[in-house]
Length: 478
Image 1 (cartoon, rainbow, N blue to C red):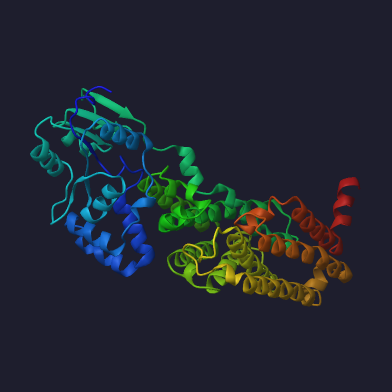
Image 2 (image 1 turned 30 degrees about the horizontal axis):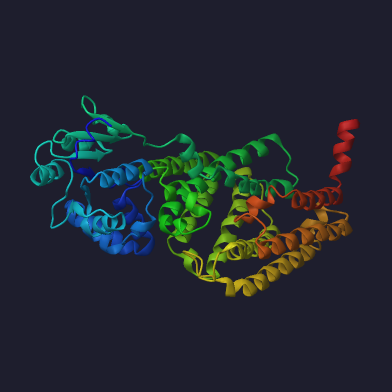
């Protein structure tokens, strides 16, 4: 590597260079998750960057052992130490974060923001020149502001394109960095959009099989998908540290450091605009439902998900809101019986989600960021069975309602449809208890061939009870 065999000290920037993340932004998001009021209050200090960083570090200390690192930079640091060179960290982050990071990686010398001095750009360059002399060190950085340090270094190690900050430098070593659009798409969790087929339920239940209705629901799905992805990103940013402790969630883009936090924040804002904009085009009722869904989801991410049993009720409410959104988007009235039936189904599936997480947990400790441990499996199983029985009972009572008798003249076929519904719910509960499904039961249900079979049998029986098969066959062959 040109200029790197000189024996001069190797100085590493932390955020975006040694680390594939930004400690200040991680601290801000962790602070919002731990103590939103104190974190918001800390923003009154943002004019004094060093003091602001110190306050965020105090509110939300980070586990430096979990922070994702740039493997190439770590290897470079190890090679430098083996060669007898001094390795140091010089970061604009607060010293209370940088010192533990250095200690964890076996780096003895630290330059960091402290005592009211924000060690960035010129301030960092002055500190390094004072310590090592002009051209007395090699420096690894990733930001345009690092140009002020590279101008005084002997060798420049550039991670990514550094915003063009390394242009014109000599003695440069390039290290891969940056992010890929595919990783950003992954952070949006597009596989979760399948849950939004729930918006079709009011249309199906009311037998409103019209093109305009179908198109309106499709637009509603676009709105809800954008809203859900927006909140998924917020949730992942709030849960970065907990996700890194999870056997599967540790591979999520922000936890793994494959997508920078600022890119995630911009993507989140764009998705929020799309969600509310499309909803407003459909109707103000749809706008209200989407806005309420996003607000409730945010409350869930910030606080409610930590509250035992309340979190399951909120999850069920968020699923139920998709059905309400289907009615708002299409203009079809959602039956109160449908909503009363759907809610206990989702209570049961919410319990299934938690049972799956506990069944797949590697120890008896509480789930990271959740209030459940393996000792709660029995209670969750009981609640899921109560939800299942309650849903079936409500479905049976609905069969006697005036609306059901008008839509489904063959009442006995509705009773027969209870059997595949019961079989499907039993299957979901059993597989969740055994840990044999995806962490999200709705996503699992959309890919479970056996379960899909039960649901299709149910729909077929209901269509037969409504006399729709005869109408459709007459149109097809008449």
